[in-house]
Image (tube, rainbow, N blue to C red; front, side, top):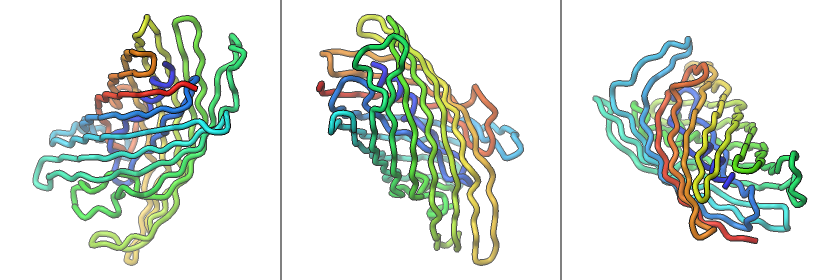
Length: 298
């Protein structure tokens, strides 16, 4: 059930500061003995606070909510290799003078993974390791593509991006542990609309996470922390240029899972970005996710 902790940890991401174009999500990976998996999830998220470049916090009074339905799949091929993709559909609702709602496709992500540390001999100390390469397609609009002043149309980063990382897992009696690391590089794009005329150049970002869980029969209770970072986005406009600021936030998660029929699992998770770390230049959200996963054994 270690994959459920990783899925629950990495899937829910809140809308981030408009100047930085959104966060990055590591897709689900097969880290167990399965040959394929199909995951669907529904996340409800509400912005709680805004954090500015100088570290000042401001409580969000107007409603800013998101609902994200996501389908993720992965399949083993050639024994230790796997491929998969993630497809999110988002709805965003805001109140106030510039409020409204919008629904659209987020950024699609493809992944190629390799099991570089298999656990065939069930070594008591060596972790199980899966490395991956990811490609993000800019199917979701960035803040620079947004046609509204409120940022309602911004449902993704909106940039092509390449990423790489690893997930390490280890089970010990009733406990399981995991950690992950990923880094990604987004590429510049030309923007031409009523608000922006020029070139937006993002930078490098990444995330690090640690987590643990305790298993009781068919139940599992888990907790995790994830630290996320994004470089500033530089905008070269026809009339003026601007330099953004780094974005940083920490997500704390609690989750519970139940497995039945050996190949079905449901997970309920809660993610809070207001409790840990030293955030800057971002919006902080609280979210709840329900996840349902079907697995096929090798």
